[in-house]
Image 1 (cartoon, rainbow, N blue to C red):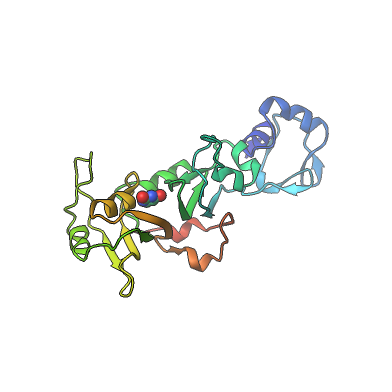
Image 2 (tube, rainbow, N blue to C red):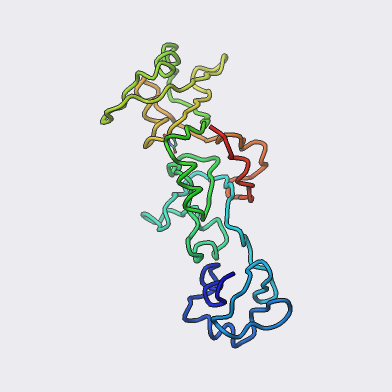
Length: 238
Ligand code: URA
């Protein structure tokens, strides 16, 4: 149960100060009756605001197909569009606001998870969980055949880093040495680009195609589209 004014601000309708006017105007109904007092305790799941149920009343967990050219920041950098422009505007006004679970570079496309649940974000980004992330790459020059063993051994230390990368699995295409999959169990800054650059094969295209049990291909999302996901799909995933 929440105070009516707290509900309106928590779910991104208006500020707590503005809530009294929303309530006076009869915009909030509980079991068909207007809730007029800001301090009235209400169950968000039983409330209608402007005739509609409160969306994502139990919190947001969603998958987005991030398009190329979008940043994962909340504020636009150098005029670039942000992923938040692809999501319902009300999500940004909720408290807590929705955030991406990890990030993809502006020039990387693919699967990105989003949530407004800080504990869930923390659990899924925790280095202890080692959730597998799979990237499909295209490189400007062939990836040398020794790269798979180097990555698998966990002995590659990237420039400026103190510890080596965790063991990672490289699966190059049998017919195209410039294309393949890289499976990681951690998320360092620009990790795929830096690992492949370290073996002399700069990345020219990068897409995240899976996170744990979720495959981008099976979600049928076009770039820019999102869908709600049941967080239980990530329970006990490592
Ligand atoms: N590795 C990268 O280089 N970029 C990403 O966006 C994700 C992983």
